[in-house]
Length: 132
Image (cartoon, rainbow, N blue to C red; front, side):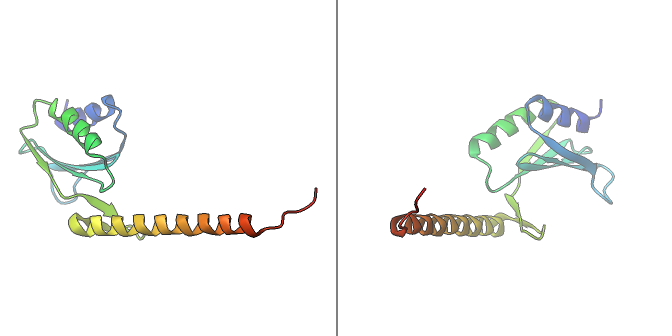
């Protein structure tokens, strides 16, 4: 069994949804695994795994995912990369850009929900009701 297959099987065994797995274009010995809340870059010549987590991933979930991968003895090196996020246009952001964008989106959602709730409350307080 190839090591890339072992990695995918280990993720699935730990109920970590794997969306896709494919070779990196132009790099014969490198693969990407797109999984729930993370992107895994695997180099089979070095037997190394680099993991990048989505900015919204809980630290506990990240730790569980890393522990699952650590159970594979054939992996010699582990690297934790910058967090990532995607824009609405599908552009990949990483590191500080990803955290900044995520924070901006959260703030907008919170403000929109607050405005909606206040509007509904105002309507309920000021409405005269209707007859049945």
